[in-house]
Image (cartoon, rainbow, N blue to C red; front, side, top):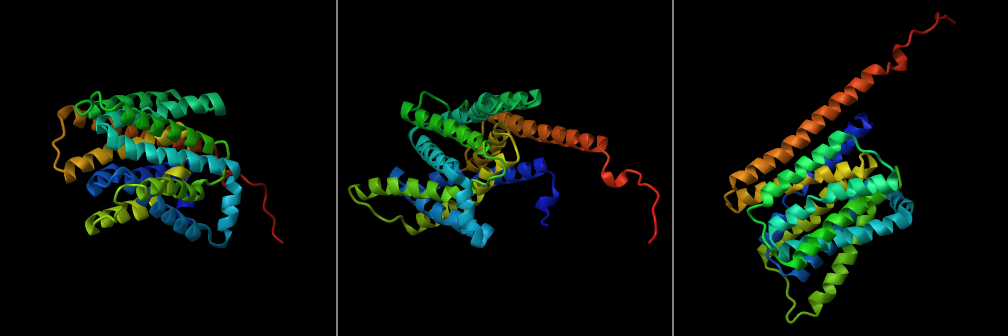
Length: 314
């Protein structure tokens, strides 16, 4: 068995979701570095990520790839459609409004997921999770405060679409326990790429990106997005959707720090405090949950430690 399978159910979820958030941290930064028009970046992101998702599915399932798709069923199709909206909302939100507005609206995703899980799945979240959601929303708001403004209502609407569809997606995955929905992300890429391709072809002068732009797009869309999103999409297999959304906020904070570092942007003191609050909250919650898990294990004696009856020799 792999080392991952040796971890507890919750530890696997934290590792997969946290790893996906870290991998996806450069997403918004590379979108800005590529500096491509809306239709171009969406088309390349769609088709290249579809290829990446397919390669990952083939590597993981081999001859059982078709069976993995069949297991997803209609729920998988809904997941693909929802993530298509999430992708478009995130990219276009960053294009049409300030980064601060996008960050603050995206921070509402865990809260939306928590409400949906409570209403639809009857999942009860402990108070510490609700407290962590509240603290993280405060921290994200502090990061975005200096950059937030009226913005464009179009961009704000796209950001809200991202937050809502992401929350619905993860909640929907929880309705099919044990079924991995990540292979369906291939169709998400094809949907986004096809729709954007129509707008790209209908443009005045459709052209291929420059060599440096193409290198950034390939790195982002063929490597980073498929690897990161695959891990994130597997998160609901192990964790409540609200906690998956909570861990995704790591991407927001780390992505902002990367933008400051690479683009030489000077962070405001309040933004630094906000980022520290988010990361500190997630770290503290993780440590506390881990201690609770170890305490519960200690209360349950393994069967191997139960005194056995008199042994007999044959």
